[in-house]
Image (cartoon, rainbow, N blue to C red; front, top):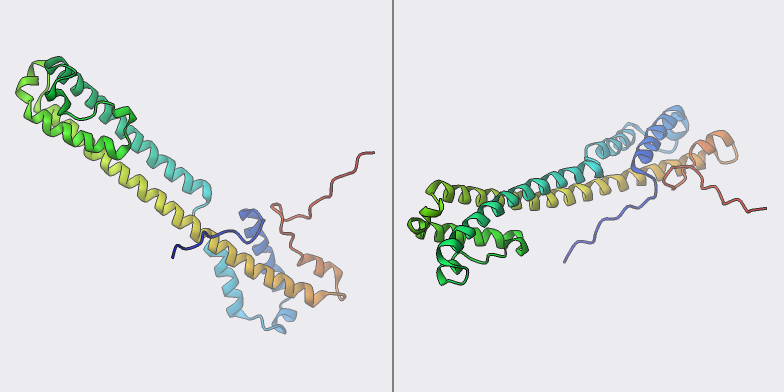
Length: 230
């Protein structure tokens, strides 16, 4: 069964959630006598701190996206280099054999710009074998073994770049999911202890009660109702 996509259980911005966690830890330390009476101890404090630190251990969404973009750029650069080499070999084959000749068609589908990454790698494999087969006939057009080796190297580079991009996307998804799970865990603890703080100081200390109010909004502040026009 496919695992359900992990979703955020809160509306706070990540940085605000982290800030609220820091503030909560300090508040509980301030009110440690009352919280100790509620069963709060060093183990639970360490659990809260570990949950906060776990969030920091994951790269943020911007960093994860930057890694993916970098791998995509590398893959695109590898493809562009391969396409350039392949077009020159198609041109040589066309000049020697003609556009509609059977030997020309042996080099594969010439519409490489329309092919997927996987398809162009496959076409390049066909081309490298065919170019080697007709090397003597194409030598007058400047084809050499070194140029065929360049084609093979560029093909392999693209193949590796495709795999690296796919792995990068997978790693990004796993890291993003892990980060959301860590954020949800931190918010769960934050809500728990904020609720405990509110209960402790309900009707006994309004200022401290307000300290433990967490607004589940992106900014962590209460939403201001719209002002009715006069």
